[in-house]
Length: 311
Image 1 (cartoon, one colour):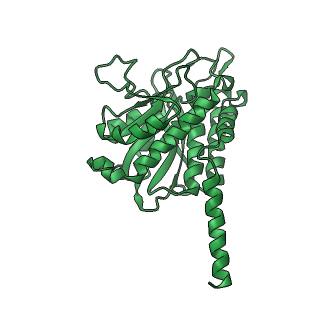
Image 2 (cartoon, helix red, strand yellow):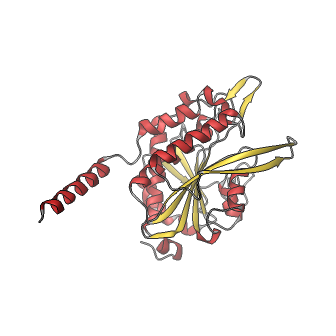
Image 3 (tube, one colour):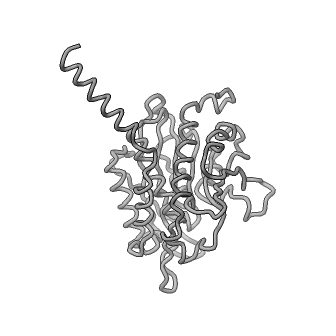
């Protein structure tokens, strides 16, 4: 073997081993994203306010540092909407990047999490650590993972704005999609994934799309968490049916399969006490790892899963 060829081989092997030695999700990075985004400096990240703009810029910086591709010349996809209840017009910003698939670049998975929250009310900051800095932290870390290990299908990493004002960011994304809707295979949405006293994480959506359940049974059994399927019964009360409770609802209305990962409401839900200090680090890391494992399974054999012929 020529010396130059041997050197190239050794270098490639070193890089491969270095990447494989790294854990799938880095707990310190995961928690750091939540700590930053849910700090008082970000003022509750209410749509179009300063803290929200800072959060969007933070995402842009992370996307750029990982080398995610953009649709066009920017990760920022602005949109406007009118809030009838508040009788006010708002400007929102979705932050969208993607990793190109190695085998099926024209087929897209959308991984999403909303980065806005409730802002400041009566001089109290609603930091929204679990809701939903936790989902955003996982979005960033999974983007980092796939930026180094390209998936088979292209993955869009969508940080949606204005979820708290009626899923407006997700609605805008689907009204003016960066790729044809027919090319979107499914959506995985993360909203509140960092704490649960019963060590329980829910997967919502398999009732509507039954073919999505079987592939996730093995990852569920292997998880350190108690994984439960549910909260997607059409006959359930509005509080128990999460089908349209977050951004995944917009995908469902377009006929795009979805899986929503989240926890049941806790005492700090939509309260100023939803702070970083109440995050459960072990639970959160396990949740992010589990979602990654589910995504890897679905990416690996999507065609077979969709037709019922998967492994």
